Image (tube, rainbow, N blue to C red; front, side, top):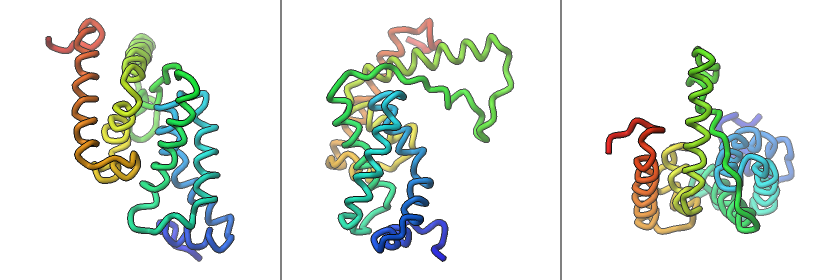
Length: 190
């Protein structure tokens, strides 16, 4: 039996034709692939991008050399697949409903008015996030939402480390500027 937390062992088993091992990889990484895809192409097309990502990953398993985390290699495929899909059309805003939940995944205990206000703010936030250029939006989401390191983001986006840092700096500055222009929405100081 393969240890449940060993991606490399699951990759090796998948290469030998063990489809159950690849299914475990999909289960393990599905949520993060969906989140990354939805931030680039929108919620409606995220499932298609995720399926395409896993299909591409399965057919390219021999290309994974194990030099870095499997997750970073997979997210690089997801990022490229999502950008390719986004190039076909301009995506609609994606609701950030996942942020309405407490860390344990349970709905936050708030009044209906507070929940409505939160949903409206999240919708405005998401619309403003979608206004960033795709390269900036990708690094911002990968770093600040998904928590990837700069090195992992460089692997995912196939960009030099200094470019990732520069893009992230510009993305944050653009995003903050966008939010500050609408201080009535966010109660941010000018």
